[in-house]
Image (cartoon, rainbow, N blue to C red):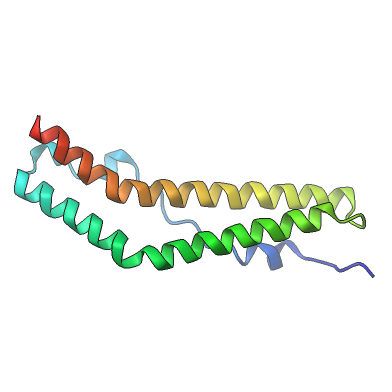
Amino acid sequence: MRRSVRRADLSAGVARRAPVIEMSDLPDFGSWTPRELEAAEIAAIEFLNQNIEGIADTFDKRASLIRRVIGMMRSEDATFEERMMYLSLLQEIATSVSESARDFFEIGCVPHVAHIVNEE
């Protein structure tokens, strides 16, 4: 018995992407005082520490969705068109994971690097 799976059913597990933060959207940390940079760095650390469980859970859900799609792609009953759809979904999920990881990395990295550069 073949199970019909709609693309919307699978992509529902992928959180909609947050707007991408461009470097031009960030404050000019070069003009910040050491105290302001330290405060920004502390705020970034606190944000990530306070939200790490939710962030990790989101990545766990996406990893689970990837495993589910790969399993359906392996099915002997899957048609060529379905396998192509699964590959497309994997690409969308991978892009979402990559963008989210980069955004969370930038939350912690940008103030930290600005603080280091300002000390030199």
